[in-house]
Length: 486
Ligand SMILES: Cc1cc2nc3c(=O)[nH]c(=O)nc-3n(C[C@H](O)[C@H](O)[C@H](O)COP(=O)(O)O)c2cc1C
Image (cartoon, rainbow, N blue to C red):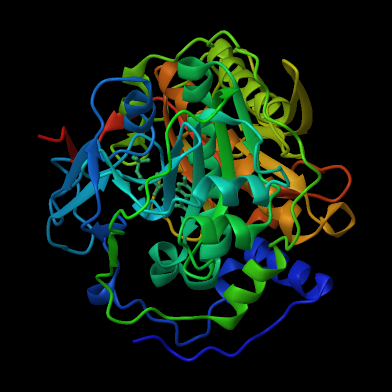
C-alpha cells in the first residue's frame, strides 16, 4: 500500500535551501519521529519476474558489468565477536551477511540500476545478482532515448548504450530525505567505474546527463517517481541499428518485497526541481572509433573495500598521496572531456601522516599541494563524524571533494545533480587509486562539512561535499567470500 502524497513544488530558492540543509545539516531533514522499518525493507536488487533472460557470457559487456555493478562478494560479519582478542565487542548483534559489489555504496544500499540498449534496438535491465539481462519488451526504448536527447529518429546510436537510474526506495527506506544526496553521489560512483571500464573495453565513451527526463524514463517503463534516469553512457562508435526491435515480447513483472513504500512530498519536489521537460539541443554521437584506454587491474577493482579493515595509524608515502590525488583529478577531467557534466568538483586534502609532507590542510591542483592551514587534522576529523564507527583519526590522509555551495546561478537543482555525479566519480577514482597504492580507504558523507571546510578557507563559496579517508589498514573480523553465478 502506498501512502497518499501531497504535491509540493519548490521554487529555485526553496530547492537551494533544501539542498543546503541536506549538505550542512542532514540529521535535520527527516521528521523527529522518523523510524526505519527494517522488516519491510526492499530486496538488495531490483527483481523482475518472467521476461526473456540472457546470461552474460564472456565478452566486454559482461566484464564491464561484472567489475562494476555485479554482486561479486558476500561479506560475513560475526556480530558480537570482539574485534581483537583483547578487545570488547560493541552491542551484541546477530551475524550478518551482506551482498557486496566492486564499487562502494552508502550503507551497502546499491540504489543504482543499469539498463542496456544493444545496437540501437532492444532494451534490457541488468540483473546484478544473476549477472544476466532481462528483456524489457519495450520496442520504443531507442526512439524514446533519441527523443529525450533531442535527436531525430534516424540518429545513429553507439553500439551499446547504458542508462543509469536511481531507485529511490532502496535508499529512502533507510535514509529518508538524505537519500536524494546519497543516491545521486552513489550513481556518480557507478558512472565513474563504467566510464573507466567503458574506455578500456569500447574506446569511445559519451556521457549525457542533459535529457528530457519523462521521455527517457517512459521509454524504459519507469514512472520517474520510484526510479528515474540520471545518466546515459554511450559506449563505442555510433552505428546503424543492426537488430530489429522485437514486438510481441512478454514484458517482465516488477516484484517488490516492501509492502509499504513511504512517499515524501519534499523528496518528490526536489526530484521534480532537477528534471528537464525539454530535450537539450541535439548533439550527434560520434561515429569515430577510439583506441581503448588502459584497464586497471581487475583485482584492484574487486579487492577495494571500506569495511573489511581499520586504519592502523602507519604513515603513507608521498608518492602514494600524489598518485591518489592525481588519479582522482584525471577521472574528473575525463568525465568533463567525454560528456556534458560541468567540471565543478575540486580536491583538497587533510594530511596526518605522510612522509615528507607537513601535517595540515591542503588544496590540490595539477600535481601541486598548496598549504591552507598547518596542524594535525586527526582529532578534528574524528570529532566531525556524526557516527563514531570508523577510526579515521588513524588514516594517513583524508581527501575532501568540494563544489560551489550555491548552484542557482549555474542552473540550480539539475546542475546540483550533475555536480553530485561528479563527486561520485571522484570517490570511485580515489578508492580505486588507494587500493592500487596498497592502501585502504573509507568514504564518508556522515560528517559536519561546515566544520571541516573551515580549515581550508575555500574560495568562492565552495562547500565540502564528501570525504575519502586513506591509509594503511589492518584486517578486522569481517570475512569476504567471492561468489560467481552458476
Ligand atoms: C557515497 C557514499 C557515502 C558513504 N557514506 C558513509 C558514511 O557516512 N559512513 C560510513 O561508515 N560509510 C560510508 N560509506 C561507505 C559504505 O558504507 C561502504 O562503501 C559500503 O558499506 C560497502 O562496503 P565496501 O566499500 O567495503 O564495498 C559511503 C560510501 C559511499 C559510496
